[in-house]
Length: 412
Image (cartoon, rainbow, N blue to C red):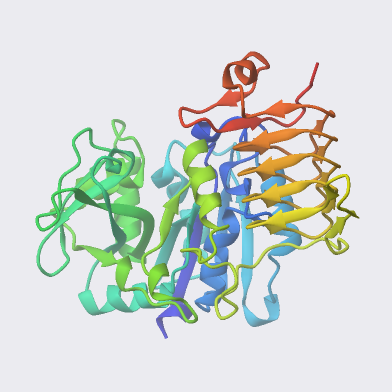
């Protein structure tokens, strides 16, 4: 089968500058998501659930927490020729920091060749979605393509953030432009553009040819979307894989085609809030296609007290609450609490994302706030209600009013 001749290369070196301060000390793929997980877990889970067990993860920027997470949660059986190899960017032999995604592949081409794959699945590590990659590989084979690009319609007003393409009636890509100021409209949907998801299937010999030519081009940006695809669109068979046709076991119709780029604080917050809907578009509870991660041994979550007379009751409504959390007389609504969070008495936390180890003191009020790891919030602190005051305290405040309290934040 094709999956047994496929090697996956996961590009996980992104700095995620638009997600700062969450990426001040961690790579974008290592950013926590949905309480238990890291962003990288979603692509790796898709690979494993698709029965692809040979993968390389290329790291670069602030890689410590990412490497630690992968080493503890993503170990396979070498006796069965399964592996998840972590390959950092290294200096020496005229190599160094990757100049772009194509350069990352070029610098590691010797390792890719070593496993003699027929197909190389190059996937990003910072999107939220489920995909049966076997279906994309089968479509790649049926089309006879040299390269397949996973594609999905997105609002034209937002498509300037992505690579955009035009295709013919057979799905062949006839034009590809990276992050255009004026995204091309789809012929039958003028308000939408067809964009790249950053997931590709390459025939190995084609990838070798493309990378060698790109490495020799001193004027190239050495990026898959900016350089490789636009350069080769007329000389190779580039095929658009329609992600909206990808069917996942256990999924519901409203999940079809769900894909989110969490490249900004606002999109990260919005995608997180998707999860706390009564009937979420992205269902974490699909046990036929589980999201896999590294787990620590935490005790169960706990809710106290039951003091109705003084309104000292630990309550969580429309929320995700992880292991090790203690809600001690506080009220949580439409929020995500990561492991080992403590919410103390009379505090309210609404539409918030609270990372591991955070302690929220008594009588605090938090709204539309993301709190990074291990922050200690003093009693009576108010965040998310007076945005100018939040800015004056050095917190990041987005245009939509999401406040980010960074790791190591100090309160006066």
